[in-house]
Length: 222
Image 1 (cartoon, rainbow, N blue to C red):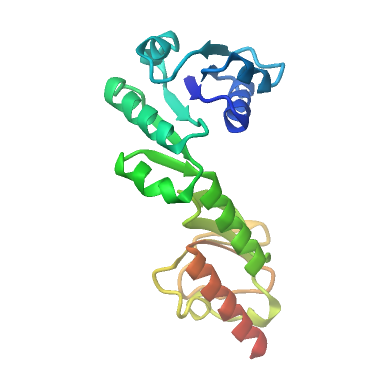
Image 2: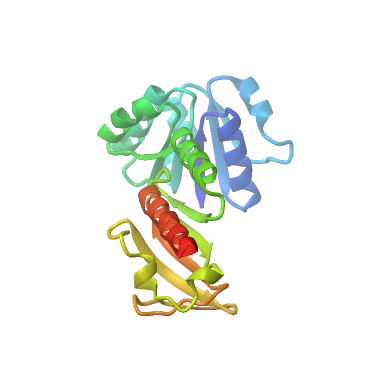
């Protein structure tokens, strides 16, 4: 597979190197040739110096054969325009991802119908979760952290109680994905009885996790 990374700042350089180390063909684009010095010395992919909005620059990346593009310059506006241009002129590219830095610019990026990765929004979401309660471990983040997959250990005070009792009051904010006991995972039903030390894997919003934390506290008080 072949990927094009547009913008060779810290994010672009790290992404390009990670893709290369995983065995993919990588082309990195930046208007400043000195930016390529940020990439690890072991990187042996291609570099293309030029303005990303230039038809000639995009042609030199062999965009016609790219499987995916990540637009990660330091300008949200430029990322939106470049991403939109690639989608319009290279519809065969399967994935066009754009980086968002300023949360205030997200609506503008969304208006283009682009797939957005917001490092600022995602980072703030994760920091908020850890500040509120570090006992829940996020194992997967969807979108920009609006919904995440968490692993949580069932404490002793919730043993022999049902999943539905634990999730009471968390409707529409939590979905149970799996219940793991003694290393063996199974799909949990609302009637499943919890045991101390079980690991419950849930898909939840921050609102759902906060409500679940409150439920666990109720169990402690009981």
